[in-house]
Length: 138
Image (cartoon, rainbow, N blue to C red; front, side, top):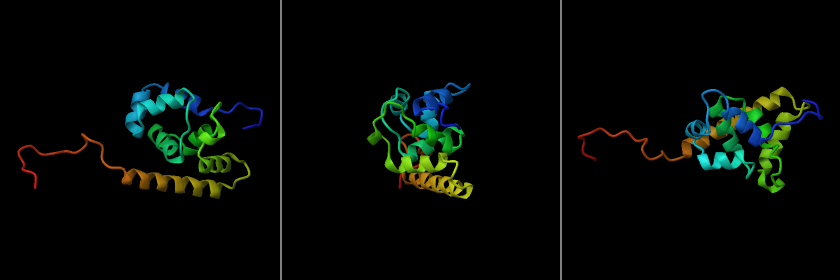
């Protein structure tokens, strides 16, 4: 991407991805585990996203995390402190044409691993437990 090209903001990325056929903010909320209110806040250009949230969004959408990270790092109008400092560094490395592909692959692998760790640490959501009828609890 050339320096003169307009980069897509996080809000634009989310709008574009949820405007695709079959997608909506509600579906993205369900599939990513991120509350709809948070998604609407981001679409309105308010607040920042952390690396784990951006990774969850990309995974739910079936998109390359690098695309989501680039967009999340270009939140127009967001104060600099709203962006997670680690996210800023990761996005710069992924977006830089000077970063070797091996390093980009290592970053993506690390992000996938961290997202899996975060996901496995989250307690099950209510209503997701399957119980058999007629069985006494032990």
